[in-house]
View (cartoon, rainbow, N blue to C red):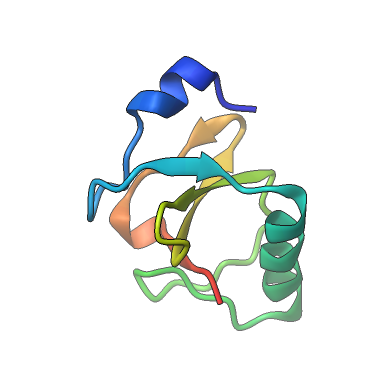
Length: 82
């Protein structure tokens, strides 16, 4: 879980939209895609490791992984949400 005060100041590095924590169903859907294979991030790299958490952009189109409780807010690490 991301500290609520920290979450208030985090933003998408590409669009500066606000971010929210992915709920359990959104995280499960992302992990199903990862497990099925063929899930790529914005940078074109295969996403092969299950996500512990994710931060979803306000428009709901991109999720940024949270690894070891640290949000990875790099444009190329964003995962398109479908």
